[in-house]
Length: 96
Image (cartoon, helix red, strand yellow):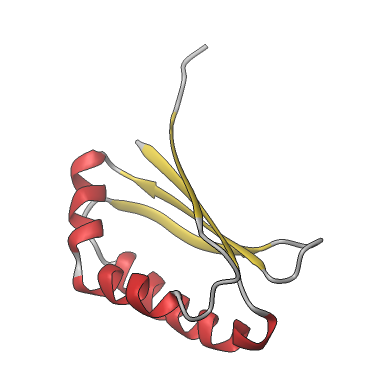
């Protein structure tokens, strides 16, 4: 499994629009084969910071997601809401 953590800083006057775009993305992404979890979180201490926490079966599932119409549409639309670039990181589990 691969986890993706994607953090967005949203302009305060664009928060409602961001949540609309995020909702569309989440609903479509959760239907994808290989999507295990797709959840949006709001930072308690920084109200305009939102983080998607996603879990995918494998890299192939992520690649298909990144090519999907709903993901590409989100990426194009969300730019108008952002207060800076998104911070996206991928993680894999480590057995210790």
